[in-house]
Image 1: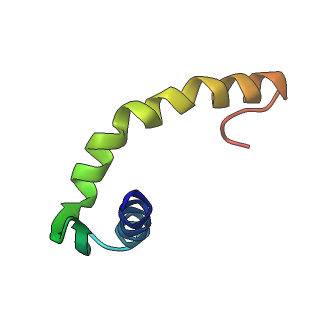
Image 2 (image 1 turned 45 degrees about the vertical axis):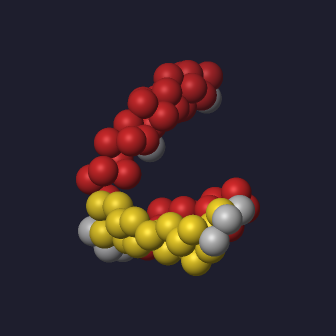
Length: 72
């Protein structure tokens, strides 16, 4: 069930790269219960904002180590 959920979520994430909204639909996810939901790109970005922010410092450090500027 978890693998099917991850696969469906990955598909939705890819859809959101080119669409404003995506659906996650899994028939009989657990004990015969179907799972259906929709997510907007804005909501996805909101949920991931902390993770995105956590990547900034390592990237900035790598740029400093390489003596590169963000514009390069």
